[in-house]
Length: 164
Image 1: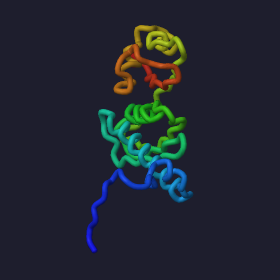
Image 2: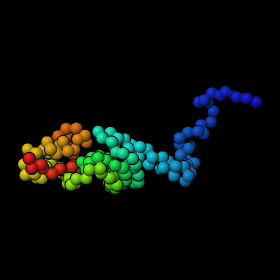
Image 3: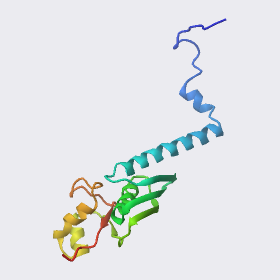
Image 4: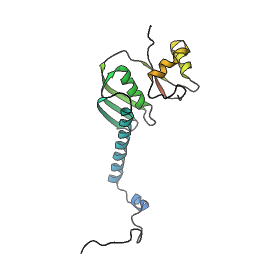
């Protein structure tokens, strides 16, 4: 006996997606869930790696709507940008920040964008003057591509104003 050739699309239609779904076992369901979680973790890792700085010893854990991040960054600003980048991904409700910082600094505050907000309006509310909107924009790059593209529910980093 040896290798026999057949027409691939001829014969009984046993190997269909519908039939495969009908015989899905608990083991297959668990494997699919594990694979989907792994795919999501790879995508979340891509979000962090797309930032313009490195996170040393990056390690992520993902479960349901929560991501835990481990690693080391140079500054508090980088730490906050990593948390915001992950937290502003649809489907993520919680970020468990386990990052260490080489050069610690005071934490910035976070602000949740409301309907009708602009960076100027947020600046006026937080700093007392709309003219500081560029500081908010710069503090949230590269997550923000334009000062006009913010959306309700988005979390923004609001750094302290320099006394200069």
